[in-house]
Length: 275
Image (cartoon, rainbow, N blue to C red; front, side):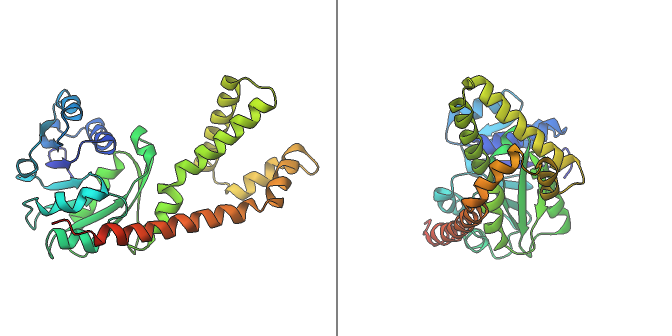
């Protein structure tokens, strides 16, 4: 993708806006970006940045090289079927749970489509997105999709579409798991006598520092955990309580449940008749 590649976003919500911001920050020509949405407020914010805006999807996709589907999964079918797409246009779907089979049925058998599973840290440029392409996607179009999603963080291609269910369980839903743990740590810190601001700061900065140690170093999490766990010390006492409650088993069950639900949603969204 070049700075002048014409990209149209169908839907101008938070995720679309974050991708647009990432493109602009990477030097993409704002006049080459278009956003379509029935709501005036998000369009007004984008227009201030030089983005072409409209509430007419047909006009929006007319000259696009890449069309990003960024609407809710429940309405994706009805919206997509009304788009006058042509076979040279790359369709990138960031709608969770909608399978390629449905996207193909709502477009054309020859439509190049990339299905993506981003996560909410993309809103601050720190996301991670898994991508899967159908057989109609050319090498150049794979590069276009990757550069588009890289604007909001890291990307990874998966070899099978079914693996997007695992991606959803690990990274798509993953931020909520960390928020859940942080919430519990903050509450426990307050119960131990810390004020809310201090408990929050300690928890957030510890999470950030731990993530940086894994991301920027060469040491796997298991070894890092062992390094900080002194025999008979405070960390060992805390971890022994987690192990006694089978915390790892609970986390595994939770992720398997999320993956199963992702597969169920794919059937539900894919089975809806968008006509």
